[in-house]
Image (tube, rainbow, N blue to C red):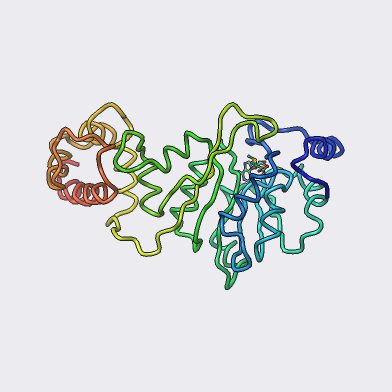
Length: 292
Ligand code: SAM
């Protein structure tokens, strides 16, 4: 197969197959030859690992993963890419493509079925319209994966990997740090894609925490509290949580002061551990209250 990052090769391939880009599926394909080898290398694609890719496009990253990893299972929603991928990946016998919506797949079963006895990593250039849902699906299900190395919109990367505490922190920062150690690896400019998106991108890596230092007593309530805390950004933590979770403000303040924080504290000033303590305390206060 010719060089898929060469624009004329790529255009010829797509034209031959009558393929047109779908904006709604986030189809911006990489045309910079340096990007995919770097994602594969920094994403642990090696002979010890099986790799899951989400969103193959024409297979430019898939091929770099296949060259390095023991096995690649790639998930792509767009069946129009089937004849394209048959051509571009024909030389690799360690690649399997599953045509499905990643959000509807049972990833635990997929890992058990396809990667028995292997360490598993996720590497992808994600479709940006569902970046957070995909990342949260990978994390919340506590899948047996070591790391997630993905390209996302730069603003999303900055939010996901924001230092805690800081002004950039959002609910997703706390959620991601509950399960993993996130870091930005490198930036990728909009000119590295075809078609070129309106935003720049960054590649991030999340290393899963195997032994959670702190665990919320009720994880569902913990995430509800975190989402509630950041639902009204300019408000104090007490006001946001009280309003969004429909809990009396005095009870929220009681839980906040039990954690040792002032009642004027803002959500972006809390650490993950403090959010866990807050949700544990709030959960107890709410469940022992006859009026809630
Ligand atoms: N990996 C290729 C590259 O880097 O050039 C393509 C990346 S492109 C940003 C995202 C890909 O994800 C597209 O091929 C798109 O069709 C696919 N995709 C979009 N939504 C998806 C979903 N829900 N499940 C699986 N794949 C999806």
